[in-house]
Length: 453
Image 1 (spheres, rainbow, N blue to C red):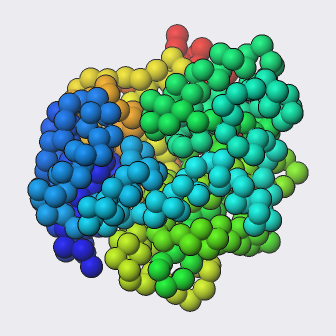
Image 2: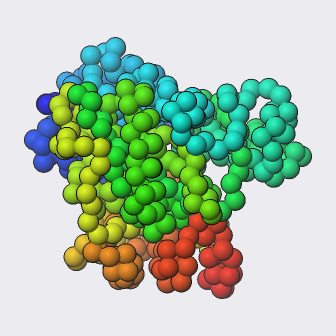
């Protein structure tokens, strides 16, 4: 096992990784930009190194800076978290070339599965249903490709995730402008402007399957997560298991995830994302070759520590469970992403000093965060403040627990999405488990004008 791990990330995921490292008695190294000098992950790590100015491209996205920090601190492995360099094949290769273990898949696996267009090809070859779309990235003749797919289409960044570089186009006249926006967003977020087209499926559910695989060929597919509640293609609420998935469908989804992991000879933790239409048909969407933001709901219902599984796989050891492709689960878990955003103003970002910070607790409540009272929130990065995760024996009890915990959550100094989550848990569609990717638009249409008065 590793002696010292550098976390090439910031915020709550850096704190999350540090805590598992501490339990495993592995040294931790935090890296930070000048804007993050007071962040909690810097205070909690055994060592910390400043790697550059506030702008991510000059710090967290700077491969030479991250590698140099690992070398000067003697770290023998790097955990990339999610976002930034987590799905960057060049970074994975740089770690390898410098004798540092990348806690994630190989450069080849990232290129095969992390590149969305290539992953679609692999999925289709494995017999997994895929949404109609372009076989390769679109560099020219965009109008011709779009017409073949058929409007409405979705333009998607080939190299990333997290809602970046995604645009919906409903008619040909919008295509040029939306292409430029998608390519610019993708280039800024991932250093790669490649995009491809998919047929846009109206009001699907967003279902994903977490998997883990080690060098010994042991592959686990975990129960699905439902991530349908989104705004601007970014998830807001996730839960596991999905109220829309029965045992037979779950087995098909898990089998598809295992097939892809094995086809790519994948080592580490990843997630296969699917769209589930109104008729119960599922389609492969993409693979995230990293840990997901919403991984805690899987941990809550299965008892696994997914960061620990990542470390075991990267160190060449066996996963903690080797008894088959599936694992048992218990109860229901829901995650609420608490962002520094004003939902009454179209989720406009909010920045400033956290004047008061009171997080909920009690049975079945977990809060992953890097925030504390007095913390000055930087304007340069993702707006996430915390993840509120609840677990209960049933979904009905989990919703009630979410409702109680959200009432207990108090933040002063910046706007947050807590009130939006309160609307969600009171909504009858949500309580009945009848959600899709258009849920937030329907929910906020009447709510926002009233809340804004």
